[in-house]
Amino acid sequence: MEKQFREAWSKMIEKLESWVDMLVVNIPNLIIALVVFVIALLLSRYISNLSMKLMDKSKLQESMKNLISKVVSIVVVLIGLFLVLGILDLGKALNTILAGAGVVGLAVGLALQGALANTYSGIVLAYIKHLKFGDWIETNGFEGEVVDLDLRSVTLKQPDNNLVYIPNKLVVENPIKNFSTTAQSRVILECGVAYDSDLRAVRDLVVNTISKSFKAVENEEDVIFLFKEFGDSSINFETRFWIDSTSALEVAKAKTKAMIEIKEAFDKNNITIPFPIRTLDIPDSIHISKESSQD
Image 1 (cartoon, rainbow, N blue to C red):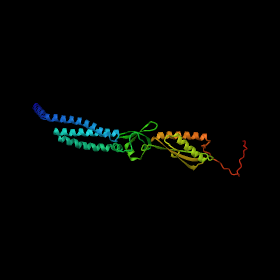
Image 2: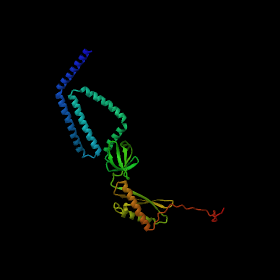
Image 3: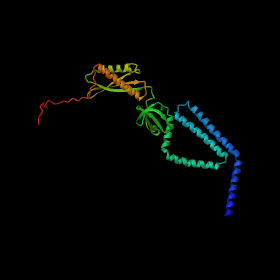
């Protein structure tokens, strides 16, 4: 038993001595590998900052600029790591790492299909010129201002100041209505007047009121006034005009202001906006007794 222990101890000492010899022999390689890795780290930071400066001239979203700079930095570090493994003559370890990375990448890809779809969609959205920060859009049943766009979702701030996070995949796959692609928005207001109203006077009064109430309406010709139909209790009309805003909230405010101005103008000129009414036509053959019976 003692002999076996001595043999095992001697073998362990020989192994340690061989490792020490190998370490001493490879000290220059270790120093070179360490220097290469440090240079790769410094170079990755420099290239990352340089890429950010170059992308500042582009129209990419801020989140995408940060992503690209980080990806470039990681790629430089990985290249440095591969060089270090080559310097240390660890080719077998490198092959093992690459093989393991392939298997892990496949498993992660299958497990994160939804997240990867959102990431890809985020990259696509970052290159769309007609969707940027500050735009007022409507998509997937939600409407608001684009306040953030990352690799996971598009963040909208609604008129009530609530934030909505919509996955990028849904934004890419569904229609987007962008109110900010033009400098103006159209306000459409519907109303009705009594049947005994002077329709020409109503038209002139509404057009004149709108043209005086909004700076964007330079003259009365910019206001579109249309009678739509003979309704059940009123003659209905529609008026349209433009305002210098792309925000849905500003459109709602302009519509409210127009309603107030038109109502005041109608009151001053004795024009009635009738309540819904119903007229009963009773045949002469039917007699209604006013006498009430008592039990």
